[in-house]
Length: 296
Length: 285
Figure (cartoon, rainbow over the protein chains, first blue to last red):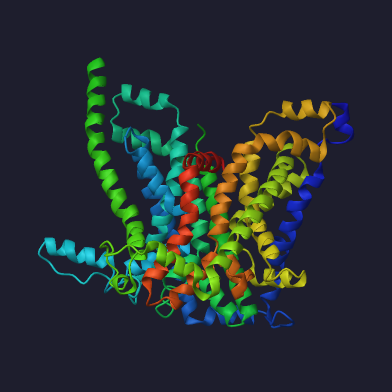
C-alpha cells in the first residue's frame, strides 16, 4: 500500500494511444468546425465571412424540409422501436418454443449492410412493379376492392421519409429487442410471484411490474435510437438520395450535397447546426430520463 | 391455490401454441421474405429478374451471377473485398487494444483525468463528427485517401462505445487481482497486458463482433474520407452498381447477396455469442 502512494501502479500513459487519436481525429476537428463554419473555405485557404453561411443555410427553402424530416425521422424511428421492441421482448421472454428462431431472425438485419437493405426495399417499395404494392392489391382483391397502393418513395408529401423510417425500424428493432430482453432478464422473479399471489393477471403484471422495472433498458433504447435517427444518412441516401426533389432530405444529406458541390464552409455550418440540434435535444432528454429512473 | 396455479399454467400453454404459430408466420413474412426475394432474384437471368417478383427462377444462376459481379469491371469487387477486409481487420484489432487499455485506466485510476475522459466519452457517443474539418486534418497529416487514415478514423469513431463497454466489464473484475500482481512487481502496461487483458476475452469478442459489423457495413465514412475508385470498399461498390446495373437487377442483387454473405457466415458461427454478448454489453451502458 505504501508503494501505491509513492507511484500509482496504474500507468497514465495507457491513456496516450486513445487520447491522441481522439484529440486529432475527433476533438480538434470539432473545435475547428466552429471556426470554419464562419468562413468561405476551399480546404486550401479561407476567408472570414461571419455568420453568412448560417443565414444562407436558414434562408433556403429545402432546409426547412430537412429540419422537419430530421425530427420526424428521429422521433418516428425511436418511438416505433421503443414500442415494438417492448412488446416483442415480452413476447419472446414468455415460454415459447420458437423463441430462439424468432430472436435470431429478428436480430439478423442488424448485421446486414444498410445500403443493401436500402436498395432491396426501394425495389420492394416500387409503386408500379414492387412486391409490397402487388401484395396490397391482392389483399384488397380478397375483399372485393381495388387499390393502386401508396407511392411509398415517390409521394410528394411526407410518405417517403416515413417509408424510410419504417425500413430503419425493420433493420434496428432487433437490437432494441435484445436490450429489452436483457433488462427483463434482470427483473427478479419474486415480483412476478408476489403479484400473481395477489391475483394480478398477465396483462396487469406487464403494465405494473415489467414496464416500470424495465425502464433503464427503455431509456437506453430511446437515447441510442434517437441519436442514431438524428444523425442518419446512409439508409436515406441509398433509398431516395433525398428525393424526389428535396422531399426526403435530412440535415446529414443536405450537408453531404453541399460538400460534393464544394461549399465546404456551408457544409461545415450545416454540421455545426446538426451538432447543436443533437446537443439541445439529447442532453436534456438523457438528464430527464436519468432522473425518472427507479432504483430496483 | 393449487387449482388456480394449475389453471394459469394450462392457460399459458394453450396460448403459447397460437402465439408460436402467429409469431413464426409474422416473422417469416416480415423478416424472411425480403431475403427470399433477394436470393431468388439474384439467381435469375436478366430478363427474368426484370419482373421483380417472388417466383423462383426457371434456372438457378446464382453462382454464375456472383462470379460475374466479382470479375466485372476488371475485378473491381474483388479489390473492394480486399479493401473492406483490410479495413475491418485492422480497425477492429486496434480498437480492441486501444479501448481496452483506456477503459482499464479510466476505471482503476480515479482522478481528474478520468473525470474528463468520462465526459469526453459520453459526448463522443452523442455528437456527430465534424466531417470537412476532419478531412482538412487528414490532409495535413497525409492520411487523406489512405487506408491507414480510414483505419484511424474507424478507431476514433468506435472508441467511445467500446471504452464504455470495456469499462463496465472491468468493473466486474476484482481489484484483488490487480493487487496480487502489483505485490509481485507487475505494474503499468505489464499489469494491463499480462494480467487484465487476458481476462477481458469475452467482452473483447463482443466488441469485436459489434465493431466488425459496424466497420464492414460503414458506408458514410469511406464516402467522405476514402474517395477514389481503387480505394472503394464493398459498400461503395454496391452504391455505384445501383446506376451501373440499373437494368440488370439480377447482378445488383447478386452483389448485395455476396456482401451479405460475410455477416451471414459470422452470424451462423457466432449467433449465441453475438446475442449474449450484445445484451451483456448494452444493458449497463
